[in-house]
Image (cartoon, rainbow, N blue to C red):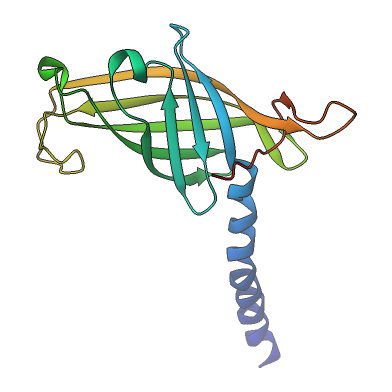
Length: 178
C-alpha cells in the first residue's frame, strides 16, 4: 500500500510546485519599466510596460505624422519574452494611409538582467492601419496599409546613487506619477 501511494505523493508535490516555478520563470517585474526603442532608420519610441499589463507608446514621429500616443496591453510569453498590443489613431487627412486607428503588435526579447531587471531588448513590431470608423480589433476589418520594423531598446531609469540625483541611466526601473 505504501509503495502504491509514494508515486501519487511525488506527483502531487510536483504539481503543487509547478505554478510557483512558472510564476518565477515568467516574472513580469523583470521587464516592467520604460524602454527607449530605436528602429534601423533611427526613428525612436518610448515604450512603457506597466504593472498589471498596461502598455503605452510614444513616438518621436507622432507630431510630424499626426498620429496619437498608443495605448494597449502586454503580457509575458516566456521567461525573457513579451508581447504588446498597441492601438493609436492616424491623422484625418491620410486617407490613402489609413485615417483611423492602427493596431501594432510588438514581439520583444529581453537581455542583460541586472538586479532582477532586464536592461535591454530587441524585437520587431508589425501592424495595420485602418480607415476611419473601422475597428482594428475586428479580424474581418480590411487594413488600408500594413507596416513592420525591427527595434533595439534600453531601459530608461533613474540613477539614485551618488551626488547627482536624477541622472538617467539604463538599468533601473523608472516610476512616473502623473
